[in-house]
Amino acid sequence: MKDQFKIYIDRLNETDTEKIFEVLDATFLDVQEAELSFEGNVTISGQAYLVKNHLILDLKIKASAKMPCSICNETMLVPIEVTDFTHTVELGEIPSAIYDFSDEVRSALLIKIPQFIECHQGKCPKRNELNKFLMDSPEDTYTPFSELPSVK
Image 1: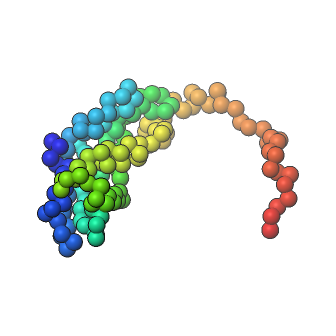
Image 2: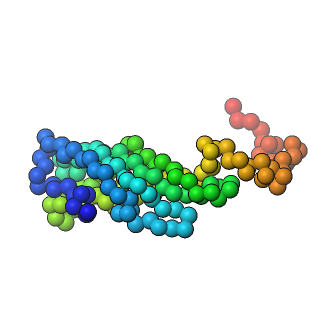
Image 3: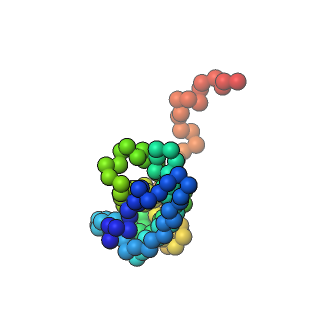
């Protein structure tokens, strides 16, 4: 499976563009946490090309993460989409003529995972049960910056 993430630099020249399109099982991401896992396929599309002494990857990545709702803890699938991922690496930093970009794909997806999610498109039915535990902030709250003169 690792061969799918390889760019053969010696086959590229400055006028070539290598098209990338892969649909892979999400197991390569190696994320199996109690409250986060990836399921289904990961779709990677884009291109790789050389500019002077740099390899440039322009990718779009789609996956589905399984996470609990922040309100009711019900597990749900959340679409994760990286629409404009660009990665540049200097050719001198690549020890061989083969560049493996699997770590970059994994990192790009992990960065896009939302911190909090809510089921039913943001309208969790159990949200009303939490309202009795939430307090409204008083209007008379002291803020130290409110007394500063305004800058014009």
